[in-house]
Structure formats: structure tokens, C-alpha cells
Length: 358
Image (cartoon, rainbow, N blue to C red; front, top):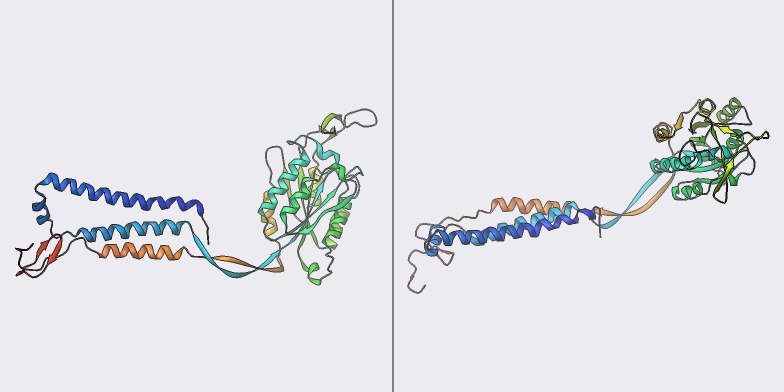
């Protein structure tokens, strides 16, 4: 047995509070009766009120409140087998890890900001298979397609410029590696039928292939390209770190500090069949990609069977309602039949009873 909302268990305190209020009300009635006059006279005037019924009514209300509190906590016990069909798309995230991604025009730097935004994106995905390709002047598969988003996050954490020794930024190499990542080792026919998309996360400084040829290659492979630009359009230097310490900024052959800026036009051209998103200094539109992905055709790629607890909140809720309903039907007053008398709180219907022995 478990509770769906264990934080609501604190509400059970209402039951003893209700019981305490009923006890206090009974105590106050007794005090007021003593103040009113002779106890025997007061009892005779109130002989139609049943103390026993009042106790039953109080008990039903208290127990009903307790059952309501338990129902709010969502009791769950007993299990059932549930089958869930997994469906979604295949998404490769091509993450730029070139030196220009270390620029600090967005905090703490472009690469770290990009990794954080991709992690937030993973929190919004449901059922899609995700893989990671890291690229600079070359590319390789950092994480194969998987539904284990925890593993994807681990691979994101270790993505940095040291993974790709080849300098530069080659979108073409990234796309070819993404196409390779889509090819499942099993070679099943349905793998080619799934909707497939590639999300480029970069500052847009493409140094090798023509973007038009990359887009055409993606179309031939039935891929939908999205892109996310990281950084600002103003030029900023590229810091160089050794053992975690900044030792200066990247310079060209003439000793001039090299600056880098976000090339939005290149990324927009790359995502002409999809959508472009911006990760800026103080804002990010990347979360909107989930809406764009939802518009794509989903493909079923597996079924999972698992046991889950049965919801049982209906039982205490129903019993609580029945108790409160029954409490309303029980009167706290009783009718005296003609000739009846009350003795020690009990109704004696025979008017000829001998009272001398009482």
C-alpha cells in the first residue's frame, strides 16, 4: 500500500480536532445546565434529548471527517497490469563544441548555456528517442538514440571542445554523423518509417560545407532540420583556459584577438524546413520546439508492461459520505409516547410502572 499524495496526510488531524470540539460542546452544555437551575428540573425539561444519540452523531461526523482526510491522501493498494504503447520521433541533437562555443557573451559561456537549455528540453519530451552528436571540424556520435534521458544528460555533461581535436565548425560532418546515428543496428524496416529530426545547437559559424547542399542532403534522407542559435550578435573574444584557469584570449597569426558572434542567418537558412530558435543572454525560445515536434507524425516503436497500484480513494470517500448522510437521518430528540416517563435517561413506555422502587 502507498499514498498518492502523502503530503495530504496532515489533514487527519482534523478528526481529533472535531472530537475535541464535540467533547468541549458537551462539557459546556453540562456547565450551562448547572447554571440554569436544579439539575433534576433541567433534566426533566430536556427529557426528549437523547445523550446517547448525540454521542453517535458526533462519532459519525468525526469518523466521516477522518475518512475524507484519508481519501485526500490517495490510498493505493492492490496492483494491476498496464500496457503502454511508446510512440514518438527520433531526435538527434547536434551540439557544437568548437572553441567559439566557449565565448562568454551568454553566462557562463555558450556551451554551458546550450547544455542547460537542452537538459530543460529533455524534461519536456515524452516518449521520443534522443541521441547526441558533438561536432566541431569533425563529428562523432556522443550518445546513440535512447529513451533514457538520464543517460543523455550524463553525455551532455562531458561534452566540451576537448572531444573534437579538429578545429572549426562543419555542419555537413554533423549531418552525416546524425544520419549514421539514425541507422539502427537491428536494421528493422520500421526504423526507416519513423519521423526523424536533427536539432543543431550552435553559434552558426560554419566553416566548411555550403548550407544549401546540407539542406538538400537532409531532404533526401527525409530529415527535418531545426536549429538553435546560442550567443549574441555582437563580437566577443574567445577565452582560452588551461587547467581551469583563463590564460588569455584566442589570437590570429597577426597577434590580434579573434572575436566571434552569433551567425543567425546561417542557422535560419539551415532550418528552412523546420524552425529556428534563439538562446540569448537573458531569454531562450528553445522550449517552443516541443510544440513544433508535437506537430510531427508520431510512430509507435514499442510496448511496455508494468504493474501499478489501484486507486482506492473512492472507498473512504464513499464511506465518509454515507456516514455524514446517516448522521443527518439520526435525530437527537426522541418522542415520548402518552403515559411514558424518563428514568435515568431511559424511556419507560408503561405509565403504570411502579416508581416506588426507583
